[in-house]
Image (cartoon, rainbow, N blue to C red; front, side, top):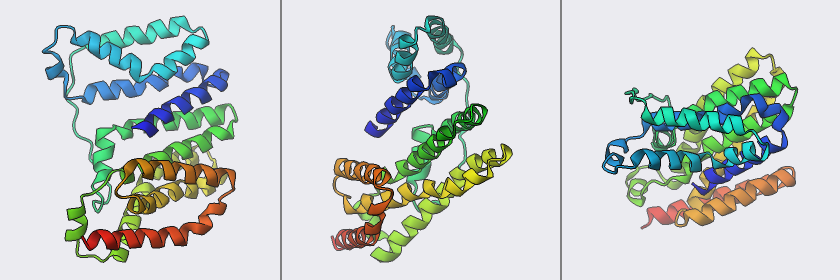
Amino acid sequence: MSLIVLFYLVTAVIVFINYESFRNYMPLLFLDVIAYHLQRRDIEILKLKKNYKTILFTEYIIYSFPFYLVLLLKKEFFVIVAILSFKIVLINAPRLNLKTIKYPFNLFNIHWHISFRRYRLIYVFPFLIALIYVAISHKNENLIFLVFLILSFIACIPSFERESIEEININPFGAKKYLLYQLKNVFINTFYIVIPIALTLCFFQQWEKLLFVIIVFIPPVLNVFFKYIYFDNTIIHQIIFVLFIVSNIFMFGVLLLFVPFIYKKAIEKLNTIKAC
């Protein structure tokens, strides 16, 4: 969750710096609140409080606060009022019963399904496609690389979750084969989420950008290694992973030379877990 908050803050900073490019697309940054509201299951519980609508309204302001701050600093008061008015309508509108979305993910790691349903990650994709359109319209290639970064971050989220030690021990595979299947799982599932973005790039004839899609696969694969190396401490796992990725960006991928060592450490940790 801390990484998701950081992602929102970084996105807000990027939008603020490039505001003229994003001015006409600011409402898109608030669309995920609609999906969140339509799928939440605690409305009936909240209705036990008389001021539950005020609670919802306050929550949705906090949810998108970085983007409100951007609009406030840019003195877009009319846009702020329009978005707040829409949220009031949303809160008071009759609720719709949406069907559960079925995902094509490989089930060796069930957390792909859980993460996409818990965090409604599927609703990020319209935003990413819109971002590609903005990038091409304004000839800003950096926005396309931002899309790749967001996509890679989404693919990392399931590996921040953990299966229980009992699940690992019950699995008949040895440490090496178990890790291999986890890597295969993250590669296949990442491929699935890359498809709509790759098709969008093809639609806009951005053929040369397809060569950079392979970058999306690197962080999720590395995150599997760090997940098992720091299996007992999720906070250390997240910190080390972020530092490793950021360091690689500034060092042009030099630290990737340590991947064989990281792989070996992950195997050793899995053997320790299976020995429990």
